[in-house]
Length: 330
Image (cartoon, rainbow, N blue to C red; front, top):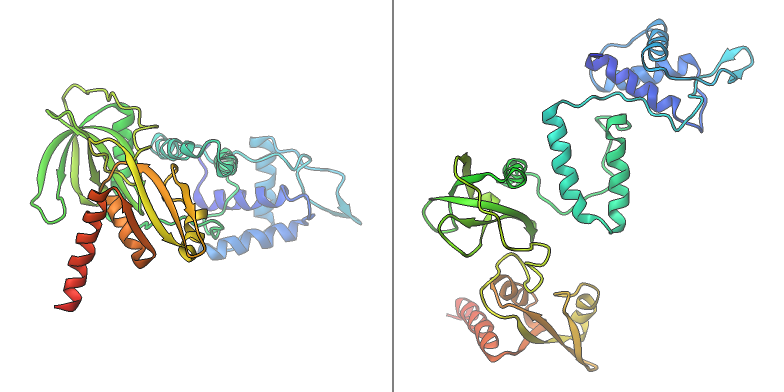
């Protein structure tokens, strides 16, 4: 049954109060709780009769069952007979359901992690309306909600799930805008940025497109090409999103003991192992493909890290350091 927003807010407050097994509410208490929520939403106060009518309607229309035995003297107290009961306040439309499904798809990637059990519980409660609109967040993730391109995420995800070919308008850093038809396969986050992993029509290789560099895109009527890649393993041999067509190799790195205390608890890569541990330094090895992200990561540690092998990568890092040094000494 349709319920306007103001009534829905009162129902939400009543549901929260009636589920509270640690407090018993009088009708006046419930009126105060409703009016406090209404004031925060810039809505007018309601009377005791209105709240009592709300409770009667909830009993008639939703079948809520109240504990009839709760009293304080002659005064009636209000609580659900079963405090595990949750009023089904919300009925989502298709657009809202798609957004929730997108979120569930992304959050499923945490399955098996302690976080996932918490997330699953939260998602099960969404339709129950346990949360008020002004609830303050208690968990923060390192992400920039204002980052350009994040508005593309949901539609790109839907294109992947429904296997649609896309025409992208994309502006690479320092280059002119390009238009390319792609088969979208995967979305990956790295270093607080999201990337679309796709294959351009007519190419065998895979490319990554930063979402903040995608100007626009649209679906086009072309047959979809399935990927032959298992993306659960595709990034195993790299740091970041660039997967060059080379073999993984052992990268041997010397780290100061002080900095290694950080790297020990937050490994550079899952393949990280200790080769040698001394008083002033630790030598570690990771088995990865050399790419730009690896190069940037090594350089970010400054003087605390030295690449020992292979010689080609050591020279590459040395050239970058020398070029940077030249800017400050010339």
